[in-house]
Image 1 (cartoon, rainbow, N blue to C red):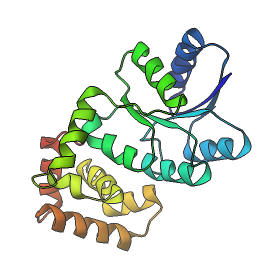
Image 2 (image 1 turned 30 degrees about the vertical axis):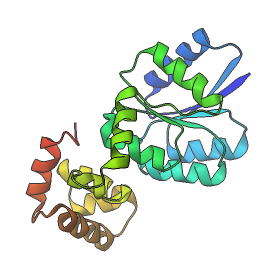
Image 3 (image 1 turned 180 degrees about the vertical axis):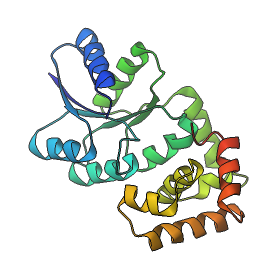
Image 4 (image 1 turned 60 degrees about the vertical axis):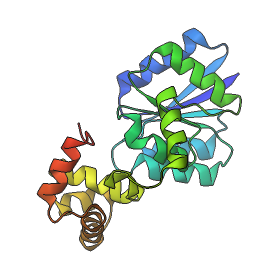
Length: 210
């Protein structure tokens, strides 16, 4: 039996994943969580063989939730399934402890292969991400500015690029306005930019927002 907990805020996607898993895996049992609170409660209350985690659920960052999961259950495999390109979040979630990263546009057959590999104790990355990770071992310089940001700074950058104010970001991330302003200042310093408008143009140019 494989016990899989699906954490995603979209009910249709959760149902679709359940149907795919039920059709391809023997004796699979699926649970669901639509937000971080439900996810952590389910992990606390039950034993799971795999978590399928959406990296951008409402409220807390998926990367932060992933770190909490790894503190609670260090050996519990987590496969991150996201709508964002792998070059945006792939390396970040792997560094935070994920066992794999997949784009939601991947074929169902690829998802099943990834699940089997991760449940067996392995790691899953696409060939493209694997190549990028290999190159990064040899090239620390010349990286785009957003790759040197911390996970929280990267999250604030994306929200600023979506046109959200510092106050709105503070409310969404449950931080103080002063803290978010500090993150904004650090982002500007690390990227050598001077305004939110520049950050917005940069994020759009590098496809960091949808």
